[in-house]
Length: 168
Ligand code: FES
Image (cartoon, helix red, strand yellow):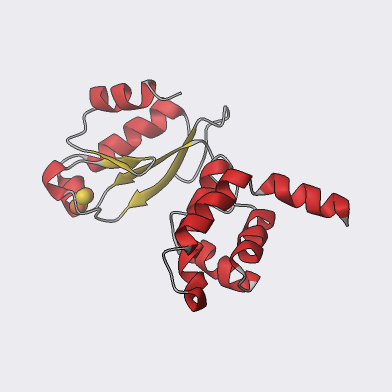
């Protein structure tokens, strides 16, 4: 019993629990479930970019809601990964405006540069080529991509190199 408790506290850090508590303060006591998104984001961030069942269970226990409610959110939103992936998540938009401005070429360039295909991570665990995105509402800056949820627009191969090469 003591061992289980110790192992659990190592999975969701004290810092993560504090962050979740800060979010919980923003909602009425009977709406604690509203903090799930923020809690999962924090847990994923601390765990190198993906969630484990143990982490999701701890989030559920900490918030005080059924585990299934957390699994539903984690499996619904594309921002959450349920398998180990590379540290830096790349999503290239290939919807119409980006496609017309060379989004497909940018995607191919990144695949060749990193030696991976869509949905794969590099062997060193540095990059995850997450998906071909639908329109991310930055058409004026086409072609564009998101790296770790930051928008990068008017991409060229040189600009892609500059963005990816400086990541640790
Ligand atoms: S089509 Fe790529 S951002 Fe709109």
